[in-house]
Length: 372
Image 1 (cartoon, rainbow, N blue to C red):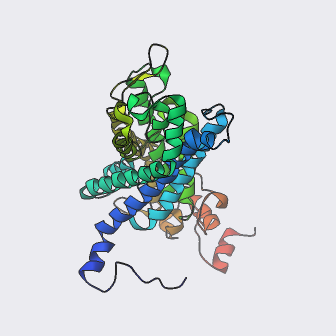
Image 2 (cartoon, rainbow, N blue to C red):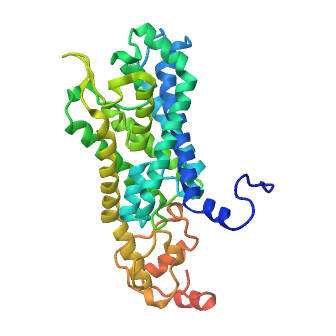
Image 3 (tube, rainbow, N blue to C red):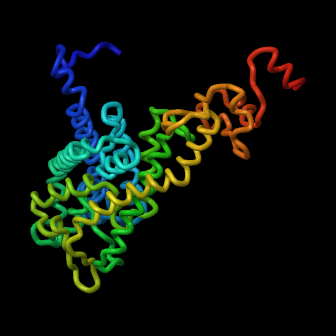
């Protein structure tokens, strides 16, 4: 690719230093979260207002008539996540989620001092992405609200509000424990699977495919538990658009998150904090679960193979283990991954080491093993 002339990072000295550090990471988090919300809220706008309003459904108010609409939304959010991670990953690691940032600080040595700047950038990016969706679909939203006789300020425009932020299902009857537990568990699954995908000691994917697999993770969560409370699993994803919808006139249904449709309808009060606190707790739990059940086992195996002191980073794989006789018989009763499950180029040689056989290059090794 041809050299690209920098727009901001020209010259030397302080300017280069600033943009290469935390300010540059904040810019990446802003843009990655902006992409996430522009596509994510955008696909909900398509299902709620765009398709009905453009005559592509049975009627101008026909939404969620079948599972197809939900699949559209879950796959749309999956692609939104993947694109956001691809955009920002090379600069900031593409957290694009305050729950990821907190969990990585708690268990992946992400600097605690960067948490608030990252959160600020993520929230700003989410608000910008939601604003783009509002700008693009404002006419369709107004038409839907007019036909449904649910003006934004009436407190009854729940359908069009759902384009931007989440709310609990009616079967929770306005209770807090059910939606809160949903957010904790959903985000725990998200973080558990994210750290599994990026852990090179495990069966990690290639770096260029990780965003797509993380998108698949979000799709799986949305398809399995999404209807409970809209699977926010990201405080910035919910609170940023919630602020935009509140400013745009959706009033109390946005903040504090209150809606009452009578004894046979949906009812919830002061819901806004649940998609914030629940994911922050769930993310830390998810990383802890992965570390307890998987990461510690991988760490123990590599330490026994290498006989080194201190923790072994997640970027170190069995491929990097030195072929020395010190590893003979040190890792009993374990299974080596097949070549289809790992990026290690010396899987077969390491398998012999794992079984306690010494390995030397050339004819001596073949002679020691005997005829094959």
